[in-house]
Image 1 (spheres, one colour):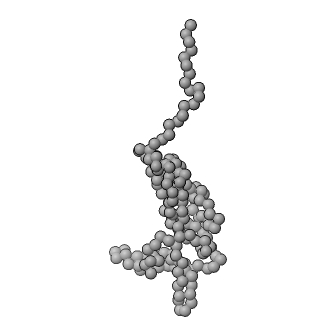
Image 2 (tube, helix red, strand yellow; image 1 turned 135 degrees about the vertical axis):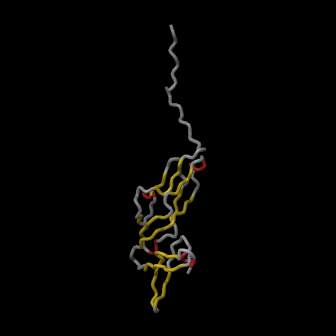
Image 3 (cartoon, one colour; image 1 turned 90 degrees about the horizontal axis):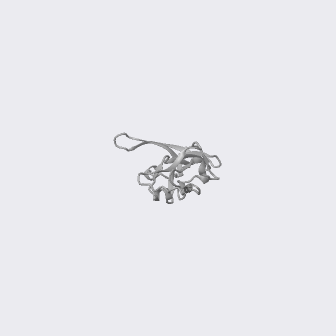
Length: 154
């Protein structure tokens, strides 16, 4: 039972009660405040063809160029609330940061999946790269005409 509770992944469980089997997933777990033993678990019945609302952990993939330049990667959200059919429920949601530069963010609205409806606010920031103390900032190139020569004196 613990392998279903102590995992960040979404797992479907076939639960048999009085000879009848139900397709379920763990919705909530309550623990003893001192011993951390499992006291109670709530199961959500998954019905084929009916969307399920769940919270899914986020997995970061790729290497951010902004981090390589000294920026600090900050995860603003560790889980996203989604709605999807049973067959489309992901274990985790992968967020690729390969193009994330300093002062850029990935928002919920930037995550596009055909089979999932995101329930969090579209403008909510999922991950961002902030300028760190040692961040290398590209110097602005001089524009033409910026330096003018002094006019010759007569």
